Length: 136
Ligand code: FES
Image 1: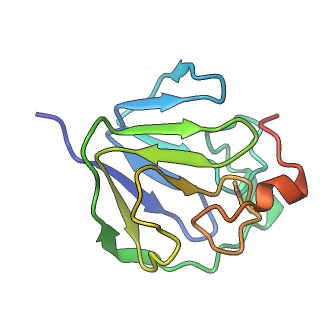
Image 2: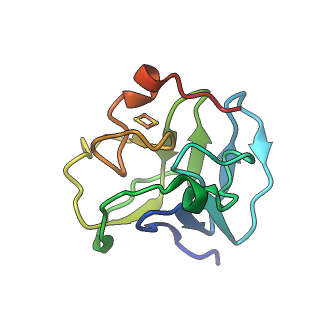
């Protein structure tokens, strides 16, 4: 039996995702995932969507307390898509550990910032368009 898929958010760092079933890139291609992966959310990794530690050099700040509470997951396969030049789209049975879930609409999917510019981290607020965020 597989473990519950979970997203933990590192303050000033990446998303730590455990037991993900499928990760897709911006072209819809499946990417190889290990039991635990770190996904960039500062927007400066040279190896997007994965974290390469660049958040330290970039001085990324997220003013976020790692969550004690968690957002109930939805039904269906646990899938994260790194949308082309945009946020992570999170679908299905994934537990999100977050203290403040005010950025959630309750809809499935929901969207997590990966450009580093959102004013409502960890959620996307559309700022990626304004800063011209790209996958490269
Ligand atoms: S990906 Fe950062 S605001 Fe949308």
